[in-house]
Image (cartoon, rainbow, N blue to C red; front, side, top):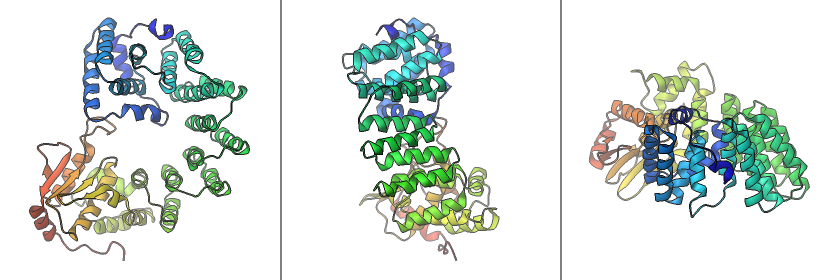
Length: 451
């Protein structure tokens, strides 16, 4: 690929500085999906980043990259490339060049679009445009495939602040003939990532008029785009229009509405919507659980301060929120979530172990979940081992800082729990059944949460 191969690797100091600049997380979903290798992939990726930071010349960085791509699996190499692109690291450019030369290389619209945007950000406009034209001439077979590529370009450029270029791609997309449901679905997604809710809704209507049946996901994207901009009335209108299209309100759309209400801190609407979801038997997801609890200011302060008066039971927590919160609905919101099935999904029971998995939960949500979990296991016959899985901070805002683990250790310690950090797994707290049973018997009988 001449547009990429002609570029030399950026200076390591420049790359290290850029590594600290992250772009809009909303637009990096496709890259994040590839980057989330986990396990050994994550460890080898960390070693790669460490090696690259130690290099002092562009040539040395290129040698490290070529060696990594040449010796690692396709999955590991693509995960590392996606990570570099998510971080807008200039070293993603020579890394992409090395990937294109691998025997297993398959052209990816998402990666090509992200590299083109990164080239433009770094001032290499000519190389960026060459990469785009080469991609279209060498790898794209039909108008619909060109349309999908333009959609990825819109998302990649807008996420890096290049909104004018993203709009240029949209203009080209609208001027070209294309058909097909996939193209419209991709267009709606990219317009929503750009924050263009009304244009996305127009594309949704056009999709319906052409006989392409949209899914609840497309309605959810448009509704979320309106909701995140504060246009809650428009969001509610789009959600209501789903029934006109013959689409039932499902888990995804219902939780999107909840997340938008929480984003706008409209607690009364959040509460009413949660009650509606319960009547429709739609359970909140772990993400929605996070959104709602994170939007509760008094609860957030309680968890942040961890003062001696920290409630150590669900009843105590609701009682405190009722007495000190300035929001009448805050205590009721927490109570409504306590009645949801989120805890059931986070808890795994077997003959040998009961495990509470806190992966994916914020510190605030993890605190509420732990209090709820203790209430539940008090009334059950326990298996041989009891554990709480907290992780080691791979998904924290600052990677490697295990905030949830620190909170879990502190709260359980204050409760007098025998659970301690496992010697084999630093992200897991564990204790044997007999000790846990003895501890639970010493706790006071739980009060009614609401009277």
